[in-house]
Image (cartoon, rainbow, N blue to C red; front, side):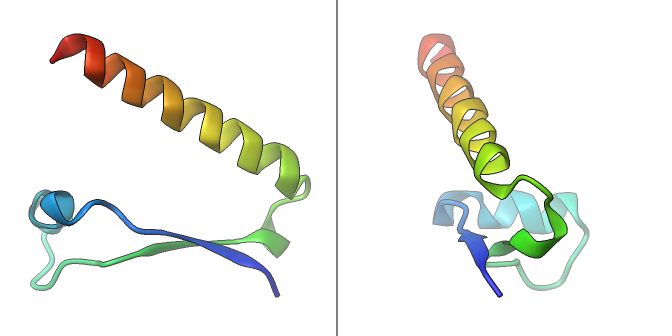
Length: 61
């Protein structure tokens, strides 16, 4: 089974913990590829959106 693990930057752990009302932060999120029909296309779109968000944040700062 293939999966991709996404680790948020350590500075965001507290924000995620508060937003999800958890006692302990979640260090990683996993995407199980067998759940996705076209995993390569999904990954490419995921990375594209991530880069766009990074560029938006850079412009807004």
